[in-house]
Length: 66
Image (tube, rainbow, N blue to C red; front, side, top):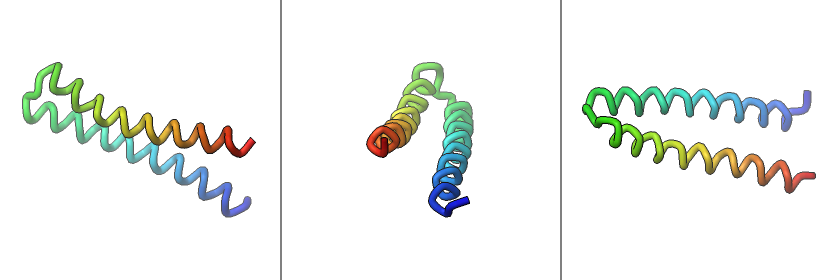
């Protein structure tokens, strides 16, 4: 396996795991702070924008490589 392929797979897997861990942290923060439905939605929306940016970057780079 080429190092570039391994790095790409590991970045995707590890960043995915990090995103899941951050989602747990945001959920726990919302629960402990009693943010309610709206506050929890706002927190997850902010996290979702970061995840969306990572996904769009990955898609753009994949399309550019074709």
